[in-house]
Structures are given as structure tokens and as C-alpha cells.
Length: 175
Image (tube, rainbow, N blue to C red; front, side):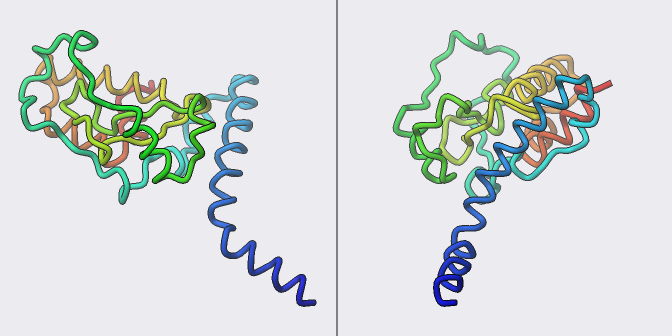
């Protein structure tokens, strides 16, 4: 009986941590399976908390020196995210660095929308599955285009992507 009590206590202490890892892997496998049979619209409606960064760790930070992101040649400017910063982000999210190839260290508020190279604006975003890094990249490009076309203010684009990028993706990037 005491062994069972110890086991259940141990599971209770680390259950949330274990569940977060298991949920990420299960979501990835289900997402791949669903996409494989052509049910991507179902997957688009099934976003989970793991698709969004933890707001306590990654609230989003803007670079106040960027007032007109449409004038910057993205990809030719200097990115200031160091390896130490990336490892710190992984550590704060409880993800072993040995799994870093499965993730992009992403800016919550993208640099093309005036986001800062600051650990409070970075999070480990999974590459695979619905609402992965590639989907967020599409949203970043769409919001940047809308800002540059004068159809959305920079402040509104920053707010939308920082608050709930998945909801913004659904609004701006899905038919």
C-alpha cells in the first residue's frame, strides 16, 4: 500500500510536466495522421495551450527603435539571438536542449512586426503538426503585408500576434 501511495504522490508531483511532454507528442502524432488523411480543417479547430507560448515566460516584447518595419530588409539585418538565449528559453519551458531540432526558437512578436531579440519574446515552437512554426511564419508574412499596405496598424498586428497567434492565423490565413 505504501508503495502505491508513493507512486501516486510521485505522479501527482510530476504529472503536469509528464502530461505536457506526452500531450505535445500525442498532438504531433494525431496531427500528422489527420493531415495524412486530408482532414486538416479538423486539425485547424483543435488548437491547444501547447500551441501558444506561456504568457508568463513569453509575454512578447517590441523593439521601440522599429517604427516602420516596411523599410527594413529582413534577412539582411542582424539577428541578436545567441545560443545562450536559446538554451535559456528551452530551460524555462522545461524542454531538454537535446530536443532542440524539433523546435524553432521563435519570436512571439516577429522581428518583421517590430519584435525584440529578447528572451521575453522568444519561445520554443514545434516545427511539426497543426499550428507549428511554418503556420506562424505564414501569419507573420501576412500581417507584415497588411501593415505595409496600410490595412492594419503595426500596434494592432503586434497585439493580435502576441495575444493569440492561433486565433489571428484562423482569421487571416484560412479560407
